[in-house]
Image 1 (cartoon, rainbow, N blue to C red):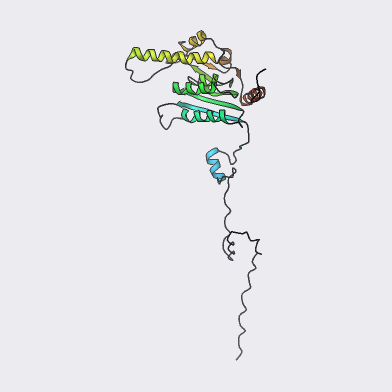
Image 2 (image 1 turned 90 degrees about the horizontal axis):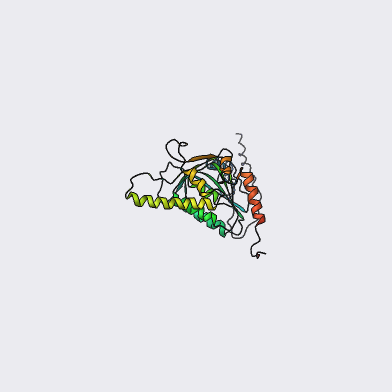
Length: 272
């Protein structure tokens, strides 16, 4: 009877040499033959754990450039939301979000200038005027740029900057303050609106080159708007009327802001 040879033992699987031990950390488990390799952690372009897919969904681009700069960009788009919350389908800019940003720019020593981008239909008069007053009283250079439209209460915000730009195709609608809905106490309401109108007119005239008479003439012009009184100015027309300083785009606005920053006296220096 011929005996069988014993089965040979399975070949040993070579293991990678152990790496240097780090004090205080547990040893890494040895890989198991045949087990799937662990997936690397997904880190997005910003390094904060956001994947490229999430970046595309949020920003429309797999990479979001975030260069370090001493210029802060503040965007005011849609309708300026004030004391009343607007419906969710409205594109809004909440002024309670804008006020802390402007104050932070003023306080931050690393920020030298502020660029304000506007594409707004207007909105709450007191909220818009509050933002305009805040921008007008900043010590740091400010430049505004109207893209699309800077209508209604967006006009004081645009002229509040040290220098204002408007795109060639952008528009500005000048009209008196209006109310919609039930009005109780008509004489008192009219007097309040008249005083508020004077505040807006006085601010625009103080911070631009237009005269009060011309502004009120544009504001109460009839026949141009379909169901209202007022005037629509397009690009160069706003410059010719003295509301806006210059026609241009983002490159011109940044160049002007850089010039204002360079001409600003160093902090702590005394005027000659």
